[in-house]
Length: 267
Image (cartoon, rainbow, N blue to C red; front, top):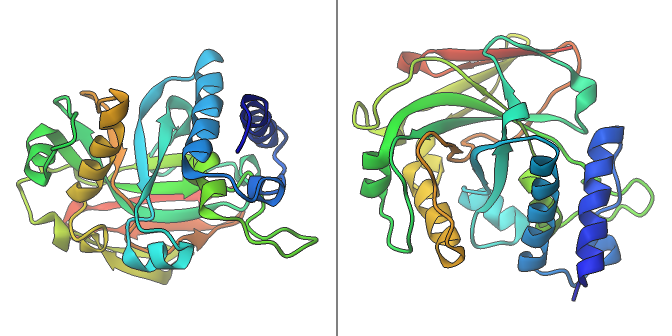
């Protein structure tokens, strides 16, 4: 069991790792019995520190929404992280690669809410009714702790990822926003190119069978804590491709067909 001092130290270490742009040891390497609740406590402590430094919460990301990723990570549910205002990049932006540790890109749909969502009984239909529009999005993920420890070969666990704000680092939104009833969102697909080479394809149905189900899950997860999803917040519903490693010099373009495209360039 982690003490309050352990949680505080872990949050501070992750915060400093991001500032210094260096990776630290996975927390579970030191605390192998860390629980999911303790991992989220570390995440909250870190996010609270960022907010106290002037950052603003703009929404949430949902990860590990595919069965394949859940099986890989040996977990039976998604995870979540917090989106902050300094994580937003414009479509077509030049992104400084050195800001991030082991950066990767994922293809998603972002739900922008117009109504409040809360409670343990939120349904997919509640989510669709509460959504102002859905828009293509790229998520940039970063690992403030080593995915694989360079000296021991230890692989970080899901709780390390949760503590690391679910590896959250950036978001690029673009393409054509649509109302959620304009199409069957399960069939929203994307082709993801890196430097003109098609690296990954996917359908949004890969996200819990419907991307709105990810928003249901996080609303229910928050319910016991009295937390709601608020109007204007952006909710990343989960990736429907594997994470793609990116480096300086790479140009990423995601083609969503009728929903347009998004791009960014890493410098």
